[in-house]
Length: 188
Ligand SMILES: Cc1cc2nc3c(=O)[nH]c(=O)nc-3n(C[C@H](O)[C@H](O)[C@H](O)COP(=O)(O)O)c2cc1C
Image 1 (cartoon, rainbow, N blue to C red):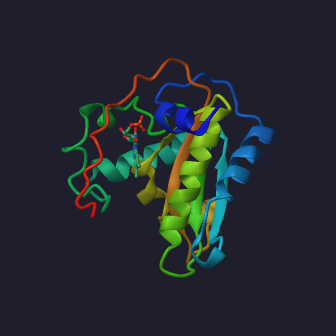
Image 2: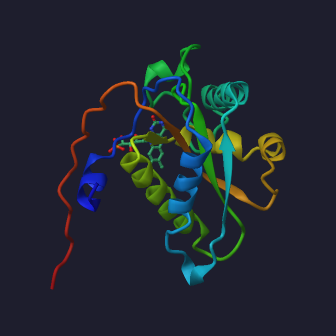
């Protein structure tokens, strides 16, 4: 797959088959992630891989609870500005994907978040090229950074879970989402 095809063809996938992502494939994705550029080559990241169904369901439930109670500072108005289906009891924050990869940042310098997000895009493009679907799950960020989940997932207290990405085998085609043309402020 060429790079243009990967960039324009990647979609946020929200419908997955129950097929597990094998270990070799996960490792390839992590390898792609760590090839991202980082500020002063700090490589300030570490990764969490969750494939345990019960753990994923518990995390999904906690993320929803924080959101619905209005206790999620990233989404302070709860679901009111999001879709109603997010409050439905059967809604799974991870769309029943079999794998969650969380990119965590160590407290090194001012660009850790940027570094982690660059790694995220590498990972998602590599996943697409391997036939997997992905989706960033911003809804899970607050839950992941609670002391309980940090402890359970081995995230050190001074680290931040920046990017939760689900990975799985797409169960259906995801239609493209239109883009605005680039807004160029100045070109001198
Ligand atoms: C920071 C960030 C957070 C996101 N959080 C969620 C999320 O919680 N749930 C979800 O279904 N999609 C989430 N998305 C995916 C976006 O909705 C998606 O990228 C956008 O609609 C464009 O679609 P595309 O990725 O298929 O091009 C997130 C994307 C980003 C970059």
